Image (cartoon, rainbow, N blue to C red; front, side):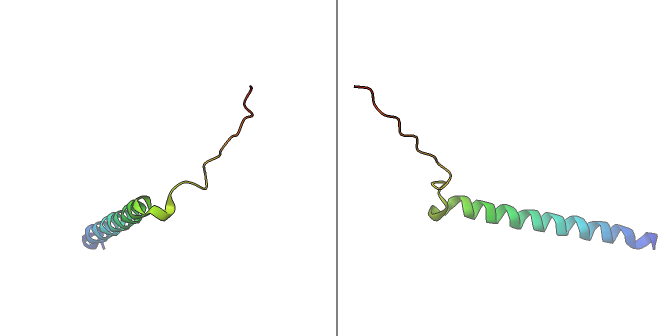
Length: 51
């Protein structure tokens, strides 16, 4: 079994790198899309003007 552990470790590392790459790609696509502008999270505070 010791001879096959290197292949298993390599497979786990490659799988992790692929998953992280896909997650980063989706995050970048989400950040670039105009529909997901952070308008919902912005608060507008209206204060009465003193005149």
